[in-house]
Image (cartoon, rainbow, N blue to C red; front, side, top):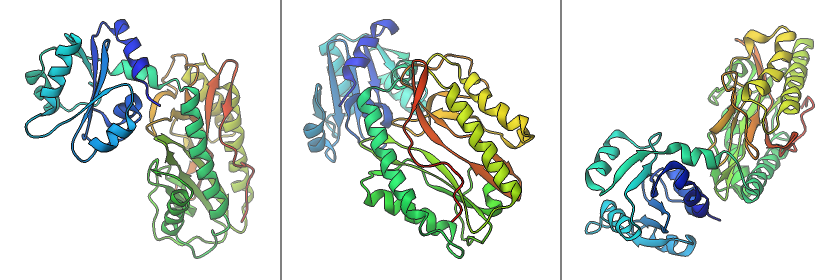
Length: 357
């Protein structure tokens, strides 16, 4: 799978002859080949595509990258020389670059060495990546099933005395053993009072009877991320804990019901937020309803109060409201939904009813 053709089709709309891709995520999106950090450059033009990398990746690139000419960079053939030769071959004069990703130092280097006009054009990639095609969605579903299998196992192991770090480590092991390439992000495991911090870092705190345990985790499969959160109880819950859990669940369901192509991010967020505010917990829901997921764990567009733009068909957006009571406990429930005409597909199958272990 690659998206060279989709990118090339967009060039005329941005009045560009080519697009330079140096960002790791965009290189992968274009080529379907992953090399880490700055170890690669993709060039998409109206007349052909190119992929350049060094000796560590060149054999793998030849095996993986299709629909592009491949060349190796070394001391005698720096990236800028390879790019200039490719641009001369394909008559590139106006070259888009990723202004949202490129460092100032790299921009200065390229602007001094490349024989073209550099034009900020991150939006070109954002506009493409925000709408997932069927193959992208299937990869995200596969990543989600790996994460769900890890959840099914970890709930059998959570008990008083187990630490947050141990749960986080087991989740990572289970996902890797289940076929994941990597984690979408470092797992969040927060128990008891730590649960009031939405992005708590796992600690040596031992799970206690009566705790909520919030687990936010996901993995990467064939380059695409999954993301989910489940909050479970250990031993027992108080009446307030049960109430808060059910409010969060109803808020999530309301947001999912409002999620569809053409709805604004603000409206989807507001549908969930109203449930929490009406229950009296408005001040304890500080983040947005959701963010897009794909090659990266945080993409655009987002379901936030500030986003008044229509959400596009095929966007994969997290649905993750929460309530966080400082120093006491927190609850978050998260699925990922793919926006369709008139509704959405929830690609998360894990149960959401309150689970007491």
